[in-house]
Length: 359
Image (cartoon, rainbow, N blue to C red; front, top):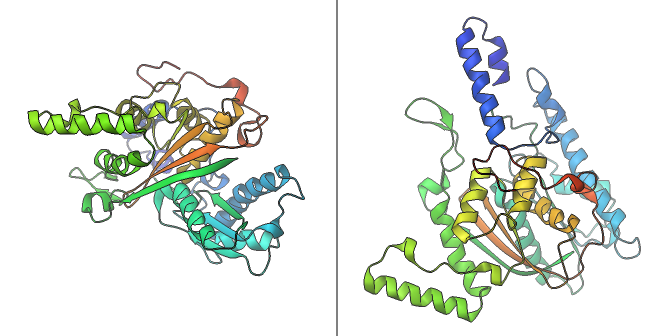
């Protein structure tokens, strides 16, 4: 978009309108000053070469894995102790795969299992966790998995917990949901993507809730549904289960501020419950499949996690995929480190993109 604007010398009005639109979108996105993009996108034209892709991947993946092994005691976990490597990157799938790149970089054993996920959309991070858990159940007891969730942007320029439960719903049979990330023109000729969200989230909650909610909440939901059928009431008037009785922390996939706001209203969450999601969007932008991991680390960096606390992660991805994961904290972080270490003291901040900012 910036390239077209700079080259549009013959129509100053159109250029000014485009710039005004981009400024408005930037403000409403609530992105912070520290949000960054790959170096290749700063060039005109953007560098979308395979070399730029590899350079970005090595920077973000290796720095994260280096920090992980540095944090773990050398005797507790080293690259040679890893039995399974799962790397997910939705929009970029080069050969050799990123999972093989990790195995090569850290000199892992020759019998290590390596899996690379691509094309699964923004929900791939939790899908990778679910996949790793399934594979570990088929491996010898005590096997260890390394899960890396990232997104590589260079080639896609668009002008300490225990796993308790994972539920994934796939709506690919619904054509509208399946085509939710197809770039298509609307009736006015504008290029964009479709939206498929509300009904698919409800379907995921219907599958996830029975495994996590207490019997008292499930009974209220059942009674409300029965009363609704008898009295022919609207769905909106049915009882909404209180997930805050079960979970102390919530990590909502921060694809956009409007998505976080919608989930907050739908689940009856407080601003504090979705603070981690909003602050992650402000600090790092839309980080795709890894956003829920940044949110979890934010909660840890704030010193809010306690042993026994439960965390609910919700992610959405192309397909349309919706994944819910429940974690139980078994070893709270002692201090802020990693991605939030140098800035956690400045958060939370007020988001100027919100119409009614409360945090």
